[in-house]
Image (cartoon, helix red, strand yellow):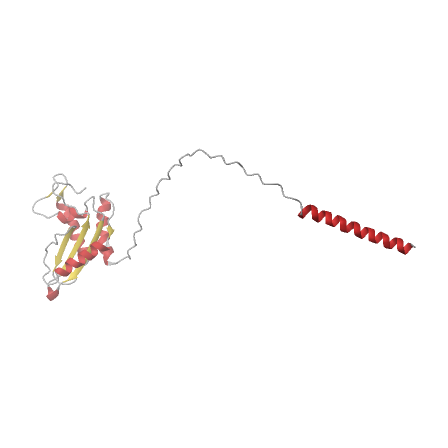
Length: 205
């Protein structure tokens, strides 16, 4: 009898656990979800956003290797301009190609003839074959000693047009070329400037 009573208790207990488990599962899983009430759309007044200020990023300028032909031309130009508080020039491959083209036109005669192109232009000629770019540029720099800023002219019979082109305030780009002419005619060097300078009646800076 005790065994039957114990068995009944076990059965009742097991059924109770099953019922509780069913209720728990039923409550957690089958419970209907509450309806989702959409939030009514209320249009917001249009307010123009302030335009972001443009951020100026200077153009990336490739660094020229020290001792390169380009630097031999460019550095003395910018050293001179720096002494006068003028902005530096940048090397321009388009101008350099133009200078190279014109130097090749002078290959057979080394004549100090201007190309009359759209750029400012300084020319140099030297006999032999060992004239360096820096020497040509320095020969233009020393012309500054004959330039009279007050009268905007060259003192005496000296030349100063190469110098004034080097320090022209609006010029920004430089390109140059050097060529040993055929048949021992010497060395022809040309530099081109953009925008050009040496406008009649205007001071360079």
